[in-house]
Length: 291
Image (cartoon, rainbow, N blue to C red; front, side):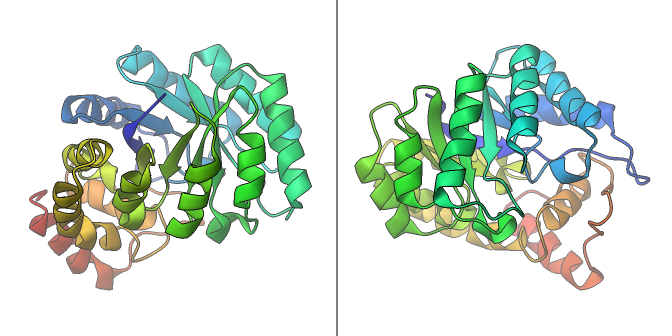
């Protein structure tokens, strides 16, 4: 089972929006040095929606090759077409990813049965561990706990990234999930509490700027250290909030660039962080000892 702090990795780009392979290499190595437990390549934070398929898979391959099995690499392979998701997942398997992250099919607004059939077909088509990803605020569709638990019975569906921040929902899933199934937070502000309830890790945006702190937080929470976990989470809360002053990944990419790790590069329709947020995000980085 993959556990702990899993960075939802940003994808470095030049000012003109071209992929910056040198910065990607340096960024991955930095995460390995700082104790990140797994890397999610080409998720939402990686701007998967703006990359061509060949670019998407090239980024995943670059991360897989560089990591060289030192930590797990999880490839984002979700799509709103089941057949496209199968193709992406098969390619991730061919490349050597350890698992895939499969978001609920956005825009289509499928029923709960449609969600079940979508993920069932992917799991049956490709023998790669599959982590479901529920983020209704971005997709327009919500995988209910009963659907997630139904899918959890399928052998190679091994986990769920739940990004609603709803801890009562998380408790329902934890109470009903089979042994060997993992529940991950997709919401940094509530991740500590989800892990204390019995969750297994945090697929984190904040880990892009504070990998060492997030790794420590997850270690404390998974060990059941309630006091230590909550104290560190309180320290990190302003940083979590700063990463979402505008739509992800706008603030976090600006912050990583401000730290000198990447260039300021995004692809339209994402735009650069608005001027009024520069100092608040910069101050949150300073307060966390990151600048």
